[in-house]
Length: 105
Image (cartoon, rainbow, N blue to C red; front, side, top):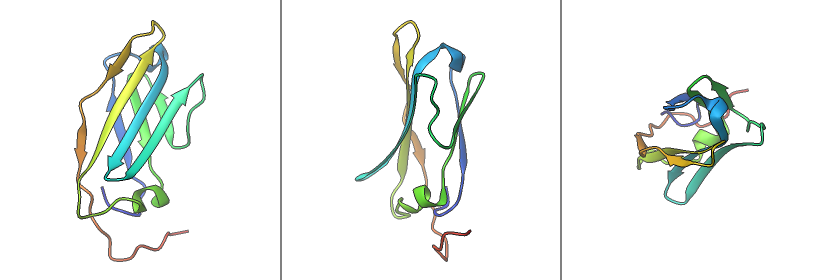
């Protein structure tokens, strides 16, 4: 993932997202934690649900927080409507730098 860009990450769940009461997608790198949390039918900015897929589109400001000298990790956690709590494996994300860090408008 390039810093100061707007990447979209797609996480495929083994169940339909309509069976989820909550969905958390967490990105972590050192002390930087970025959380996208769906709950009670309310989607956070940048998150969309489509069948089994959770799509997260990060902003330039969000990706600017990450350091190109370290790998970030992402993980998905869900609480189903049947009250089962599930977690994915951790996904490693290589962070790449850009030559200019200005936010494009």
